[in-house]
Amino acid sequence: MGELISLKNVWKIYREGEENAVFALRDISLIIKKGEFVAIMGPSGSGKSTAMNLIGSLDVPSKGDIFLDGHNISHLSESDLAQIRGKKIGFIFQQFNLIPNLTARENVMLPMIFQGSDEFEREKRAGELLKLVELEDRVDHLPSELSGGQQQRVAIARALANDPEVILADEPTGNLDTKTGEKVMDFLNKLHNQGKTIIIVTHDPNLAIENASTTYWLKDGKIDKITKKKGKNKIVGNEK
Image: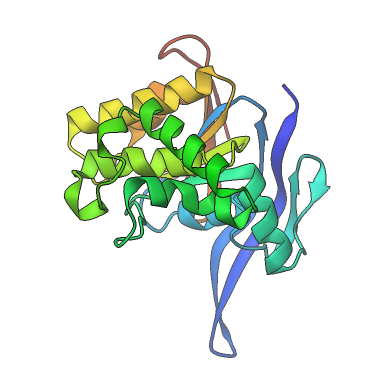
């Protein structure tokens, strides 16, 4: 597996006033390989959400470099980053972020509009993706007519709309009951088995340990440790 995303000595510093600086990330370096299942793990305030934004091309670093497919994207404009996100990365957000006045099908079609797909192709693919997440009988329902688990599955289908290499999920089970959360993780593991690179950002150590082959544990904006798994639930590496 080759390198897909790498962060090299990345810092993210927010300025509060002229003198005060908040160090959200401090000298972070990590590598995510193609086809890997990675977890970014840490409590609230650890920097994991900032790391997610940088890994997902939603933000740029204050210092350091970010590489995607070998290309340095650290200093690209927002319009260029948006193009990369649209083609390379599918996002699944904790709050689902579905458009309330669009049906499930229309929500899934939305990312394809921005990539210039024609209407027939959009409708066909949206139908296929909703069938994949077992919602073919809910295609014309609004988000308010769906359960939390169904909304999250619509979000998964939407993330797959442009067939991205990477699925980046922020607390994918955070708003779901245990049983529904397990079903969502089953879908993510199925996508991983089909060759997708999966990155989850979570505060739940069980979610990371049970699913990810590599987990980066963040604390106070730094990588505190890295654990790797070989085989089911067997930790084989633990390094600072």
